[in-house]
Amino acid sequence: MRAGALACLLGVQAAIVSVATIAHADPQVTTRVSARKVEVGEPFSVQLSALVTPGEPIPNDPRLAPPAGATIQGGPAVGTSMVSINGSTRVGIDASWQLVSNAPGRVKIPAPSVLWQGKRVSGQAVEVEVVPASGRRRPQSPFLLPGGPGLFGQIFGGHDPFADDDDDDEPQPALDEKLELKTAPDPYVFLHARADKKEAVVGEQVTVSFYIYQRVNVEMAPARDASMTDFIRMSMISTPGFEPPFRTRAGGKTYMARLIDRVALFPVRTGDLHVGPMTIKFSGQHVGRMVDRSSEDLVIHVTEPPRAGRPPGYVLGDVGRFSLSATVEPRRLTQGGSIAVTVQVKGSGNFPQTLAVPARTGVEWLDPEKRESIGPQGAIITGYRSFGYVVRIQEQGQVELGKIDLPYWDPTSKRYEVASVELGKVDVAPSATPDPRASASASPSAAPGADPAAPKGEADPFATLPAPRATLGAFIAPSAPLFDGASLYVVIAAPPLAYGLLATAAAGARRLRSRRAAGASSPTRLANVALDEADQARERGDTKALSAAVERAIHHAIKAATDLESRGILLGDLTKELEDAGVSEDLASRTRSLLDEASALRFDPGASAASLEELAKRGRAVVRDLLAVSGRARG
Image 1 (spheres, rainbow, N blue to C red):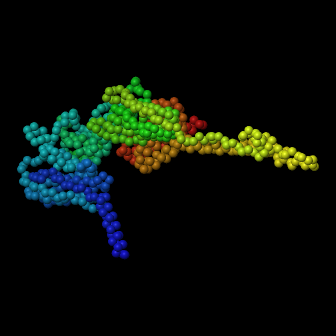
Image 2: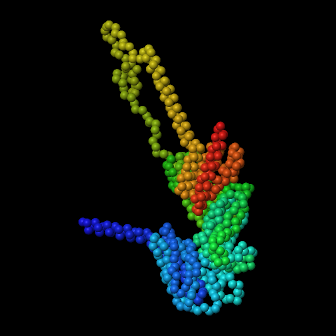
Image 3: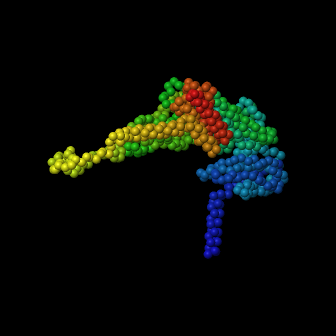
């Protein structure tokens, strides 16, 4: 029996080890070399790529042992990597080392390795043939980024991309005149940003591209993205930094330019909005060590679409080209039941966050569930966003659901358009709940002594009288009635008094419940509850929940301070409405600005913990000041 238990335990352990092995397969590690044949003194690079399935720990600490017959001169230059293999995505790191051969012969380069899950995982050993120097030194690659000089040696065929030699027949990277600049901010390496437009309306797509211009070998640290505070941003390329390079000129000199990021920006407010600079630290012989290089801080002038001809219901920021479609299921239901209405917005641009649903008595629309598939297609952001509503219907008969309209500004045609969809009718059958009123009373039974000749169902009025006396007898006084004199008055007065006492108690209980309910649903309490929810969302790092909670807290505080329903006021008009309601100009401006920032931060997947902390802190300050306005008004 003990042997069987031991065998069972070993089997369970083996199963656990097997599951652990499946859950964490070793990284896919490959080794590449920039050239299989080099000259003595000619630099070449060795690259290690270590990829894992997304969600698994990323490999780190790449190492390469010094080979016999060559010297490691630089590296490792390490960068992140993301590739697609047969439809599946892998992520990891690329590391490269620069080596120089010392003497002719065959150099055996040991397998480089990475550290992963507490163990070292190796690539493959490679061999390079070293021949005597020919006297013509081959130029080094201009980049020492993740992938190493060898990557550019393969792209450029070993040719110097910066040599202005018109007689050289070796292939060169394409010359892109669109990237040519009149001046060069730096003679060796710099960043350049450009936007496809300098003026836009709120919600209109602005595409910003960031480039590296380079003339010498450098190492680079991960980029610090531009702030883009007043924009909703979406990436336009799936693998930033891995686009092909191009030759171009800046300040009369030849540079190699590479696109490192491209984003679609949707401005969320008017004014001169700053994109902010992208910053990268570079290290190199001509540059120095960890030297910052920053791109230009582009400024986009943003206005509202024209007010002339603006259709009713237009929401500031709904910009692009859209169409609407809808499904309603089922079309037949019972009174008091629900149907599902799904409205899909399809097109390109800054998709609407809400839709205006038709309102009518007896039809209740609950908050929608949103689904979307939005991303870059060519040079625009396109896709769809659907809104799934549950609609409760209390009427009966044929109920017309109405029509949903989506007014939007088309930046291409420079005019307003309205996308519409008819929802049609639904047949609502009466509820099957029985009538609570009684149908009819049963016929009363005939009382004892009732006159048989009386009509059926009619009682004899003398049936309860005593029978007549047949003989004389002594007088017997009748017994005193139970309720007589003072007791009769007490009995008569008791019901009204009891009713009055009960009515007074019930009214007091109702007032108490009303005060409690009013306190529970007061705007002041709801604002404080929303602030507590914002703090909880901040601790979880939930950007969307935090932004939504801050917005709710501000709207409740506005209600408490001014009795305004701010959710129904356009953000562009909110400042004036608050000032007219007695709020100071500074507090009204801060309130409007914070609502803008909360709306923008909700859809920023890269929001930092510091920005979440700052939003929660400013939200609490604005709510406190608004509630103070409410207190002064009551005083």
